[in-house]
Length: 61
Image 1 (cartoon, rainbow, N blue to C red):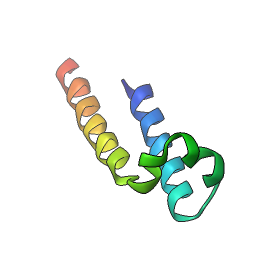
Image 2: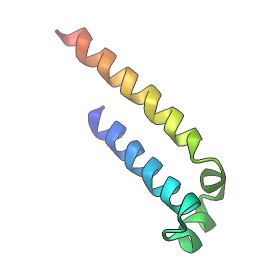
Image 3: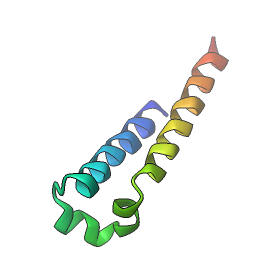
């Protein structure tokens, strides 16, 4: 679960960079245009995954 959370966090950073700074925006925003317009949607998903991952780790203790 930590791996999935890290991958979604990385995708959030990539789409945020593409939408605000134009880093690779020509190729990236062609396929994921909705995430280039609204990168905070992925940030919300990342936050929920972090909370869920921490919940799963506390459950095992």
